[in-house]
Length: 258
Image (cartoon, rainbow, N blue to C red; front, top):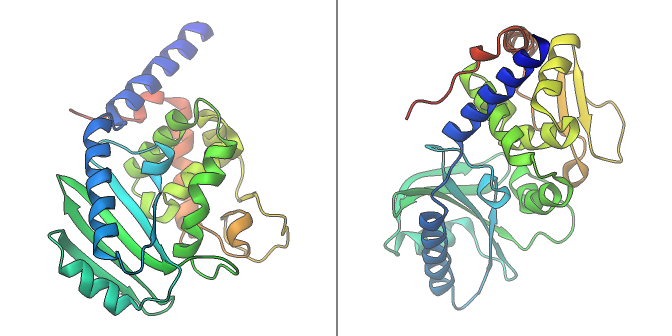
């Protein structure tokens, strides 16, 4: 009976994963190539490094959540204002501009060939990293270097879990990526939440306790700041109770409707 229950759980997780994963990689590459060409042509006088970051770079995108996140790194300084002005002169459709005054970056969102994209300009990030946006430049290499063959499956299961219980924005995609590197298995992640009233995942050599938050996730390129700093004690309790429910009844985790 236990074997049947285990096989049933794995089969259900497979259905959740298959229903949620992004599959139209041909459309993705067409859009990627077109966006890169447009950006490079726009800044031909100060050619940047156009680097894909985020879930599209680690192949953990979900259906309906697909977007292309680009770090646009300049060797020669360029202001956020000039970058935005020149992007507006292209035929790219901009849907939102977020000027973050605290950390000094601009985040340009848009839509191209039925896919969302995000552009974040920065100086070529050699030296000290001071913001999450600069840090994102290094995410793909770190994830891809350490991941196992089951990485995408487990990340997408975690994303679906946190999305379905309403806390994905607080945990973030990079949080799911790093938890997958740490736990290597979706059920082990659920079990750890269910049993522990606080959780710290640290890939950084800096092991100092700098936060009393219930969930702290950091790694070498941005020590002393948690990716999950918005997870309050109340949210953690909700995650904990939701994890217990899925462990008791795996069908609590829903298959995404077509």
